[in-house]
Amino acid sequence: MSFANILVLGRDGQIGSSLVRQLPQAFPDARITATEADEIDLMCNDSIAQAVRAINPDLIVNAAAYTAVDRAESDTEAAHQINAVAPGVLAEEALRCGALLIHYSTDYVFDGTKTLPYLEDDKPCPLNVYGQSKYAGEIAVAQTEAYALTLRTSWVYGAYGKNFLLTMLRLGKERDELRVVDDQIGVPNESGTLAAFTIKLARKGASFLKERRGLYHFSAVGQTSWFGFAQAIFADFPNPPKLTPISTKNYPLPAQRPMFGVLGAQRLADTFSLTMPDWRIGLDECLTQLKNRP
Ligand SMILES: NC(=O)c1ccc[n+]([C@@H]2O[C@H](COP(=O)([O-])OP(=O)(O)OC[C@H]3O[C@@H](n4cnc5c(N)ncnc54)[C@H](OP(=O)(O)O)[C@@H]3O)[C@@H](O)[C@H]2O)c1
Image (cartoon, rainbow, N blue to C red; front, side):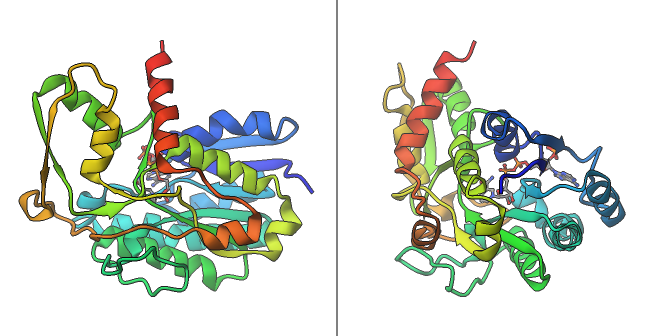
């Protein structure tokens, strides 16, 4: 059965805004409600419960989160409430109204000591407050009886929002040389592609998805470093800046990052017959979109 009443949290975020652009075409007959903190504030459990009960959705997509990884180190309570407590409340409310919940998590739940792609059964061991809060959110969702799909992704960027791609493009115009970390390995995931694959998943229908609730790695194919990502961004750039690879220890930040965060998405492929394209395809599409933007 197709979804008729869809609630998206995080309307103005990277994945959330991509969903808002794509959902009406995929679900033309559905009522779509997309909210920000002024309508449903994840800092406030009552706000979540009241709003979900009023909307009574059959699909909730939680694209809202506390994503400021470095700020989270000193803003622990807010990160915990938004990323750990609120998803549990949302899951309880989803259960109450019989909705499917799609929730996103992160590769930062892992400590990055592996050298092969992380699988869903690998044990998380987050290195920073953001990762700890997101892992606690995964557990909070899983501990309810809700029909929930938790989708772990990594290195999200896109044509909108605050992200590595847009930062590189801005700095590339301002500076002759950029120093970029070359020893952290992961997979860049374009927000439009993540939204498109979330929708492909949703189109499988409520009962099919409810029977397959659980945790899935949700990532493009391939891997690179931040330096490799920057090289790909500037590959066709007129007058590109000189890119210099540096190591993490020469770019100190408040939050420690995993050195390796590649997510193997075979479970997603086996369960839903969905495989995202190579990360470079998402990048090409995004750069084309930016070039054609008025
Ligand atoms: N960004 C990444 O690299 C990355 C990597 C792996 C996984 N993920 C996960 O993917 C999901 C989406 O990430 P994203 O990058 O699209 O996020 P994003 O662009 O940072 O957007 C997050 C959204 O959450 C909203 N939000 C923050 N605090 C809120 C609150 N108290 N109540 C309601 N809404 C609130 C934000 O609103 P304001 O802008 O008004 O604060 C924003 O609209 C998250 O679960 C994230 O953990 C992200």
